[in-house]
Image (tube, rainbow, N blue to C red; front, top):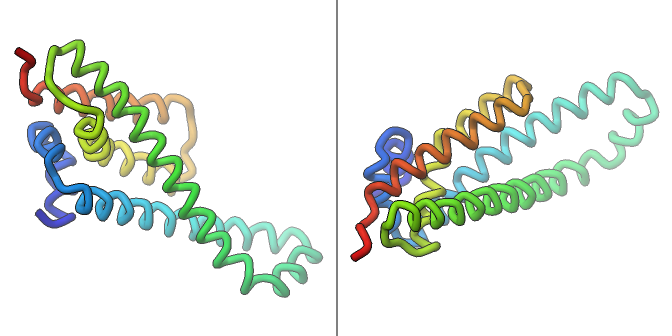
Length: 166
């Protein structure tokens, strides 16, 4: 399967999300780092726009940024990439642990590594929603709570397709 097929199926098909636990780890890493790169590019554009707003407010900052602009952009991009990677991996790991708990409640067979992959693909739609929220600068505890609930619903629906314990 290519990345677009994985993406498309993870948006609407919990049965395939559960089947994606068997996708090779190389393809999983390719999927997640493509996603992290997209989020980083969006964050970087917002960072640059934020700098331009601050530049118009302060003349000294404008002179200082002219001197170090060649240095600030590459380091900020790398820092954003590392931070986004860290936050996304932590988020998926927490949901994978919750997924293992869901599996034990549903009396289904599954390992943490399988649930980690399932949590990654189950969080595709909620992460897209969070990108839209960040582009439009919508921020609220209710938005974040709804994103987490969507992920948990997808995770629960996908967990129903795991094999039953005997």
